[in-house]
Image 1 (cartoon, rainbow, N blue to C red):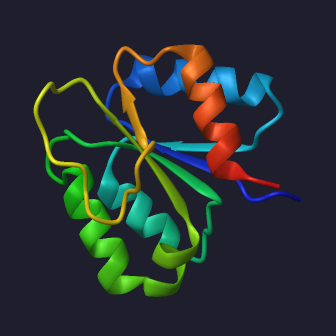
Image 2 (image 1 turned 180 degrees about the vertical axis):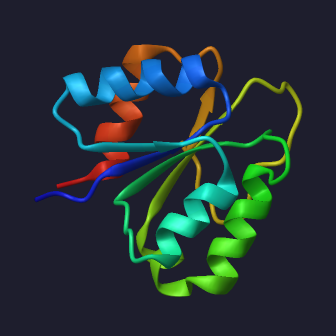
Length: 122
């Protein structure tokens, strides 16, 4: 079985729409509403293939999640692809997110599917 895509997004509607779209395309999806919830899953052995990460969330930002992932789970951090989602006009893309890893909200479904396909790989 292929590894799932992890959606970390605090907005319930956005999270569910993206999940429904990706599930409809045949991807396995797990969704959580916070970075801390995601880290708890990962500590229990969960290994996503791709992470869709909201940058601006309460309690733990996307950047704080990535920092924790890098520090606490360096092997997974090196292996997993991350697509960053944000509605903010001005921000700095986290260092461990490469070019093309940005999804601007509201997310265009065709752009989402294209970037997920490219990032997910074979």
